[in-house]
Image (cartoon, rainbow, N blue to C red; front, side, top):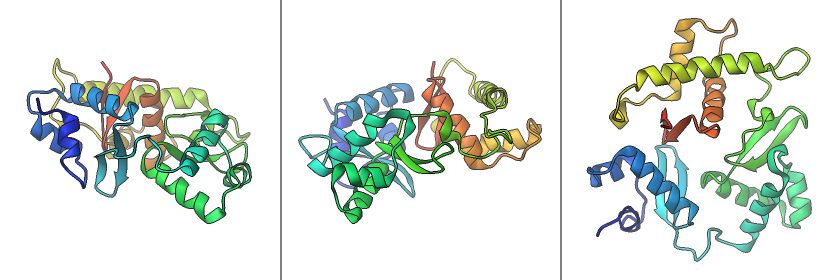
Length: 230
């Protein structure tokens, strides 16, 4: 039986979620998401972030890391958890040259294994695992008071409004068509129209809120789209 893994393996340039949906019309989007996540967890496919969106490719390496150096950097970042690690500390602890460290960090970011965020506490860009969402990940935008304290009440309020809007936008027994699912720009536009906040929120601000909802398993993100995690 032709599987999603077989389909991804047959395309050297990779495939998008929409292409998988077109090929496997009998599968629901939620089932496709589960299968893709399982394949990625088992290191059978790689996930790349491109200008055109998310692309899935067969992992031809025997392990999930292309080189021992790449694995070293990943494990260093994983070790520090939600605090994040500065590039200088990565270079010092790994013993690798600056240019190689920079190149490997970029590769890991493209594969959605790590991400860079601005840490308020350290006042610099740090690296952490892609799924980690600490309070520092909210950056120094509207989420902090003048005393640099996280305004949890404000964050929760925006989270709840954004979640309720997505809930109402996608409310049905079956998942709406993929192309009709909301993106960051749609949630952002709604929040501006509703005048929920006295502070003007940017697209990046709203993206951070949606990232938290994904981390809390209230939403699922697929490419640029968001839908409820039922």
